[in-house]
View (cartoon, rainbow, N blue to C red):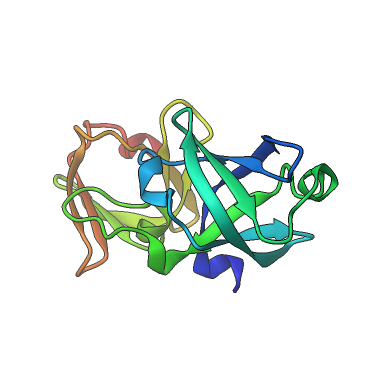
Length: 174
């Protein structure tokens, strides 16, 4: 499985017991969707390696307590603590309406109700307090706040994000 075919689910945060159990931090709003997984991909040396789950249970909200097959000691667990966890994109629940996954809109055109199409979404910057669409308009990068109030429609069929942006937001880049 290639990383491009997967989504980031979380990270093995720490050991839980002396029998090789670990706690996985789940980077999701709905951790209960991932409570009964059969397997996950663990990133190890830049490769995704399948790990099969013997038992799992939710632990304090955002954590999943997991016992993997063939991880039976503290030393085995130490070897995977800190590694990222991935699942195939096909396991993502389908979203409808104006809800979307960040990876889903990369490559979509972005349109303002007033200005029309003004670029293509190249990535999403979620490292700040407010996530931003990074939009390319020719050689110019435009940063557009991902605010629900501005979002009019996610048009999956035509691969377009339609927004109603404040006057001047886009123009200040052009």
